[in-house]
Length: 323
Length: 219
Image (tube, rainbow over all chains, first blue to last red; front, side):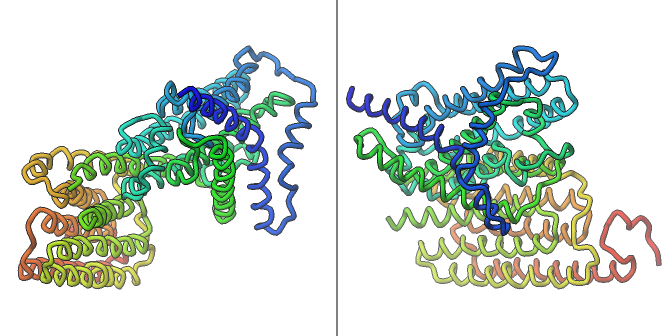
């Protein structure tokens, strides 16, 4: 038992490290894919790391009139994402933190990060900060119930709300994710992950046009090391959510309770492959998409909410007769 | 193992039927609605075909093939022909906006499950377990019928309502006799043809099929 726990602890540390180091590389790769598809050469996969290093070397600036809320928000955001990275099954489904943090805790942590950043936007007192905060909270209020519902539909066959247990069940019985309920949940979760990480068509991560920006508006007043922290946290958020999406529906190769060090190494390799493929698909699809009008966004999110709700009702009512 | 694939196939077709209903409410482009309607017809036809293959009932499979031809090809084809003459093939102003409609669909689905519980507990087979989805499609069809303004999207709502009724018949009875199914299907075909002629006349008279512009009777 203690051996399994030790492996689980090592696995949790490894997956936090992999997310922390890999997230900027993933963001760089997505920008590179986009640049190539648009006929540009691109800045290279390492560019986000270079940007982060440059930002860290800059002087700290505190805008006039801001309080501790503004100063603490980047640290809170990064902290919540790192905590999620330790709980969520990325490399191993056997994280020691999995028993204390189920899917409700993960959704709560996600919301905590969003709220911290929105409060920081309000704290600056600028028009853009307040506008960005209001938009971010509007979207978060629509997104979080859908995340809960969609993963909840998957937790019905596993009889547990722990993400590790859900992924382990799916790994043991691959048939349990090939149901209509899982397909609906997958569609709902895809839309929600895109909304949660502020990608096209919900939010354009590359623009600073004041009429459309959501995430960028809240972080407009940040500079230097704090901006680096915010950027790094949002890249990690994307990585963790993509890894969660991949592992919930295709848990192939994830390290479980019985797999040792070799399983852990295999888990790292497999998750890198899965997340890379997902990211390339996402970046490639974004090239062909325009940003959705802001007032159409609730429509899209209401649609994904309905899909999530249908997934739950179907998985609850249809799976009862086994004979 | 055979039972398991039977249950999976039945659940998948019932789930696809419901998913099409949600997408039909979601989309506004009338051409996309017609395509979705044809996919829904396909999902509906798979229900009797699956049931027939499971119960080794050739007549049910034949009914399924008939349903497939009628609802996946002929009826959407008739609606598409009407659309070809339409100047702006979009549902511009539904009475309820799309997000509210989608939430209403969610509520109707839950309602369908709530009211059909006694039916399901009466005879808990895989087919009756999928029956609430058919009731939900019926309710969504009525909902679409009353909240849309364009005549063509109301026809789509009517056809969805009928798809739901047919699915309910297949799922709750042991098998619809071919004569009954044939009669009901011909009835629907006739209704759609009448609606087609009616909307054609409306377009000739008024230039569009927005029902809100029909305010007074003339001779």
